[in-house]
Image (cartoon, rainbow, N blue to C red; front, side, top):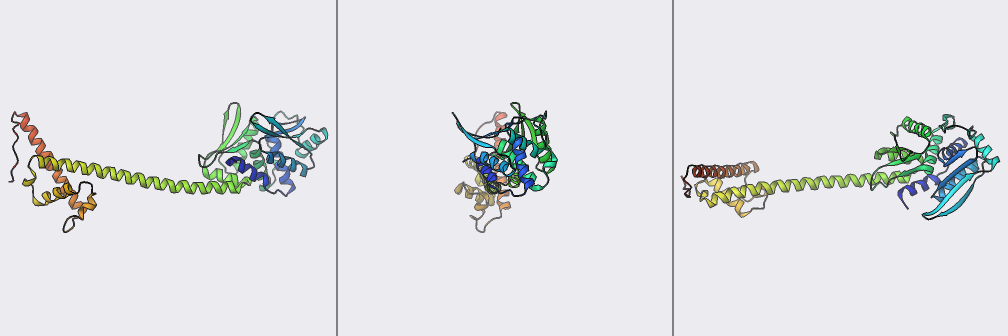
Length: 319
């Protein structure tokens, strides 16, 4: 079962007791159903529990509807409908509507308390909502072809600080939320508390993973930096060695060169401990820089000599 299906099932299982809240749930179903007009109401869903929940909620308000299964190539479609004229009349009386309205807009009088609001939004999610698995990304959406309803619904969510956004996708209005905290909060508000808790757990896992990745990347960068520095110093030392110039250097530099040649892969900090007594990192770093500078100066002298026409290799002597 998908994460979105689990959230819908959790919402459909919750208990709604107050009469005003039950009516608000029915109102949410009506607003976001496929059809809601003078002929009645039709809700189509792939979730059996959603269709049964709609039937149960309307029955609590004295409006009888039917649930039928329809086979189609992609699977079973469950349809909840209210079509009997007497039941249609009761339904419109329940909401204070006629079915002849030119557009569906949210009537604030039908959302009397926090429970009403929660029930209405939860019903909207059951009929037209979806939420992405938090292992992939954070995204919760409501879809409706009714533009005025979409505007009202966006305002309703914004009024209660759920930070919605609205767009159009293939002639359908999409009201969406993408921040993890808001998706988690809205799921909990609608009654899908376990789904909200799952997002919270996933956020914790991602946080740990990100910290590990940052640490690993930092370690990798440090190792790369160390390897580059070691290679640069080794090239300098080997050049001095090739030019027989090491013996002309002061004893501390000759010792540093010998230790680096002996332990080419050690970090500078680790190499400090190979001296007796141990050197400070700054002290050893200074010696390595002097070795690199000596190699650079010698190379410059060789190049200048070649430019002047004297490219005879002369071994350096200790001065």
